Amino acid sequence: MTSKILIVGAGPGAPDFITPAARKAVQNAHLLIGSKRVLDLFSREIRGEMLPLTANNINETLKRAMKVAKTGKSVVILSTGDPCIFGLLKPVLKIKEDVDVEVIPGISSIQACMARLCLCWDNIDLLISFHEGTSPEKEKRLIEAVKEGKNVMLLPDSKSFSPNKILEFLLKQGIDGSLPVAICERLTYPEEKIVKGTLKSLSRPGFNPLCVMMIGKATLK
Image (cartoon, rainbow, N blue to C red; front, top):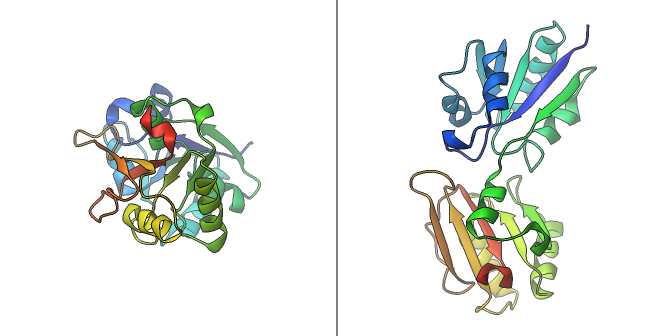
């Protein structure tokens, strides 16, 4: 018997952006794991047991997923956006124990951001996430890329490195305040908002925690 865990991309947030493959996987799951926000998205498809995933119980919950999968039951882990883009694939692979992993990709907030800004992927020089917190290494990569005139797309963190803190940080590093910036909030939701401006003009608090930032001249297109 082959034990397997299925990691399913749940999309950026709106039900219309959930793939048919994701819905089918959820319907067939004996155990479904995901954040409350993601589980709510699939409320009509869920037939098996639900196990909420939080930042505090992630290791414990993923280890339980491994044990259940080894019994032959269908285990689905829902990952916001796409599991391979700063998603749950990485933590699952870290603790994988004699269990096969299959991924059903989803639409990420980064993809939605690119679409809203009408940008091609080959225009992006650096893609970076601060969801796991910031570090001197990450900050250095960001500074170097911006100073070299590269186009940077990033995922802020509302606590450790919010959009406002990022913009203020770059200004303190001597980056030109007229550098173009776009902040895409709550992508695909009814209250979606896209704000364009400059490093200086957008340096203010109040942006939604669910957002993607684009820094660089490509934003002007």
